[in-house]
Image 1 (cartoon, helix red, strand yellow):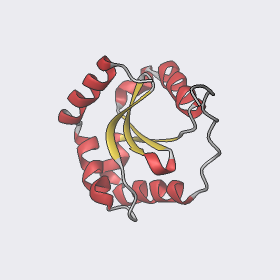
Image 2 (cartoon, one colour; image 1 turned 45 degrees about the vertical axis):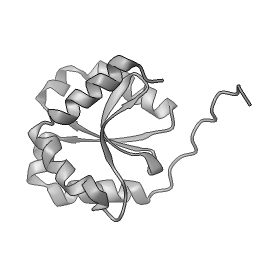
Image 3 (cartoon, helix red, strand yellow; image 1 turned 180 degrees about the vertical axis):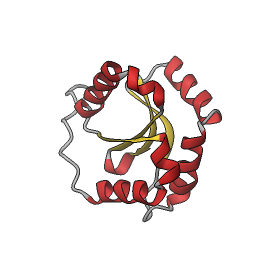
Image 4 (tube, one colour; image 1 turned 135 degrees about the horizontal axis):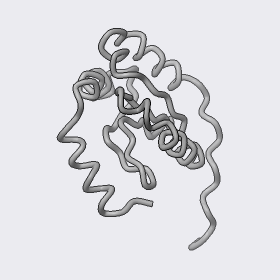
Length: 126
């Protein structure tokens, strides 16, 4: 469930991409990766994912040096996203710059995998 603060924060983050996010976004936007549509800075629950392919339930996260100290938060975030049926892959910012093609290949391979079945939505209202 989204809230107004998360939505507003996502809008701010779209305007303030990191250099690594901007670099990867230039390769993901406009269905450049085998026709898959990605969105950037997308609210999912209480979290904001760096990049998401909604059709494949794939989240791509970029980590800078600050993430070394945030492992507990990252694990909690990953568990929450997986509970919603998302698959998550992470890359270090350095890899995005130094190994762009390899990063894109890992993303493409993940997109081509059969996604796990998503949890059924809570019943109600139907």
